[in-house]
Image 1 (tube, helix red, strand yellow):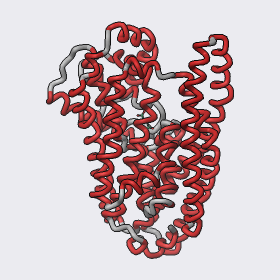
Image 2: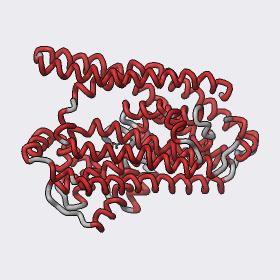
Image 3: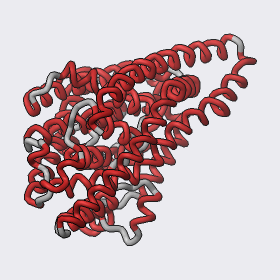
Image 4: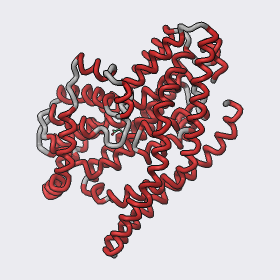
Length: 447
Ligand code: ASP
């Protein structure tokens, strides 16, 4: 694998540039198409047809290829990660570091968002006409989000057991609910470490082979990205436009500033202090990951790319990558946590309800916990946002205020979610001094 790393990284670089151009072209063409459809209304039908019938399916091919590999890749990476650690005491250390960085990252994100929201107070800047328009236009979406929120069970011991150990693991896999599979993969890897050396070696080789095969499929998917990304972005721009960005400009501005700060300042600091890495080199190396996260709005769909780039371009040990990244895609959502906090405060500001410091401190905790429960798919945080609103005595319908811009901010928060996973992997790798010498001797050659 390492022998290919050099040539793979050159092509990944070129690919990242092409995908980035695709992204820009998609936005520009999408805006032009929107302008055309409002200037010449008769073209609107054709443009919508192009978006829905041609471009969406192209994007779908790319997305579905990535989704194809998620389940086997998560399973094999995690199980191999644990197997390669060799000793269970190391697993405990890795888990402790991983969860600590996840928690710091998410909590800092929410605090940052809340501080900015308090300073700028965008909710009180929203005029009544816009408020009414949002409620009228997105009332139905809000009802759907509320219905989904009602299905979520509260946090009790029993619901946690159900969450991790459902009666039918295959059903949860089918629903893309990855937590039970993650637990199963951890158990699988842990059980594997207790096998006799030769068996452990062959299990490790089989998992490594499976990962390599999945990685090739990811490569193929990524080759499609320079076409699929502009197709998807064009379609999103045509369907959602940027008008809502204007009416909610203050809110969108605060959220984006907080996100940019979290991504480039907080994460750079974490990276530098925790892993001694240069943020500039880091962000250059993970461009493909960030663009994939932005265009898919899904941590899960990005995961195969995250694992591949982290191993090939950042030199993260397979064991750390296999352990931290799948967990991160499911649990570590700093962008989502930040966003949830901001939305709750925004809705409170609109309805003129003051949230005290103590309530906002509770909000930090609840936003982090609920972000952990958000699945890594587009729009997954909406029902949890409704839950949070209700929790703070705010109307769940308030979610309608942000539905018009949710898709676009979903792209941004997913970038943060995924970047946080890679930063964590870098820190854990460094803290645990993960070199091949640290891996179980009989499987250390596998990576
Ligand atoms: N789309 C986000 C992700 O996949 C989740 C969310 O906040 O809706 O990371």
